[in-house]
Length: 419
Image (cartoon, rainbow, N blue to C red; front, side):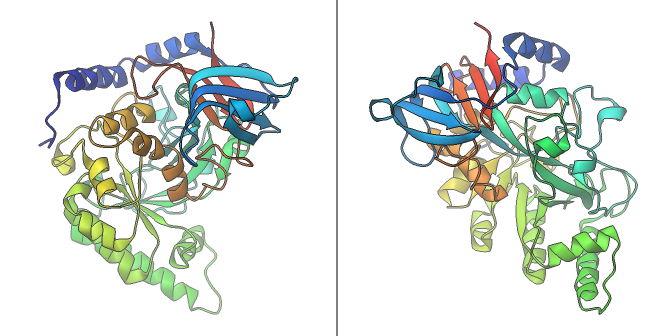
């Protein structure tokens, strides 16, 4: 059951957003393309003026200015003390935020057509395939990337989806670039692992939770033993699992039920692994255990459908993790129906309507997401020296009547509302 008692207004917002996320996506894309266009192909000297600038590196600035030069943020501060050079293009907005970060999605591998030829995020050939590289399947020109970019999403953590014990690798990319090389920030970010009924979604082994844990342990023991050999195996699976054992790469463990979350934490402790919990629908039920582990959580989409392993899903999951002091970020996630993705901005808005402060909700899709993904030195906040990734809005970003009026990535104005 949902644990929330919502006002009539909030319920109306939920209905609106649910319908918005489930409309025919072809029409949605056409509408988005009519509203926004890509307008600049080379870096420019830009001054972004905002009535409110959420830097996420400190308090929001009223009447702030962000100077951009050479693809980087040059300076940020109040307009009264931040002079705009004469040759800078000036762009004004009501609200300015760092470019949004979707901490876990499958776009770029799964496409908007929802047909077998553009659904490349899960291979049914085997249960354990950590060697599958997301970069080999990523389509930088996929239409879904363009759509989320027009809502201010500038960075995505994407890759092989849940649905197998180990479905493959994830990657981190900007939502701009002609090809995977131009877009990629981190080519191998994590290894996607699933614990629970979804681990055998293709009807293959492992068929039980005990078998899942046993198979995962067996692979980890094998990787440990390989590291002790004078001549270590050079096959792709062994090479990537060696990096997991050496703590160079974390496991992204999708687990929703409390018992599966506990299994993930137990195995991580046994093998001294780095992990990031993913989904965690029951996270609000076992906050003490998660807190004690020290591992962060990438919370599944706030508006995911309850039922099955998400029977205890709560709209307050994010706020309860926050209250417990557990690092977390939000994600658009994956569900096996059209449109295959959600808009992370709307998910954060729903979390803000259910216990999170506006700042914490925004942090969950900017600086906190960047920290969990290990990319906060480049993105996640508006600070001098960081990548010039900016989102601009004509009102409160969490109000569904507001619009993203422009998106800047690496100093490029990559979308802008036609007035």
